[in-house]
Image: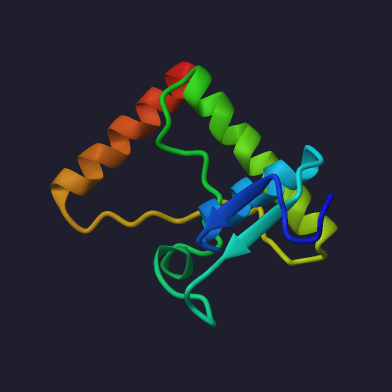
Length: 112
């Protein structure tokens, strides 16, 4: 392979861009990532560290979310980056928010 060719070019070094680059590289593809900023900015910075498989409907989507979480835990472990698999705390400030949280708990319990 010539030095100036790759199998895939990824535009954006946010969490999705890096996830795609990582997945392709694991499959043996050569990848280049292009990023316009010299430091982290945007949605990936605002949402960093949130590997939550919650809010997905039971079945295929929830299974996919769990698989995604497992892939990120594997990557974090391989890179020796810290993570805390301790869950999350959700606060409800209003009655409608509390109702959504209660409904979510009922759905999760019913789906196992």
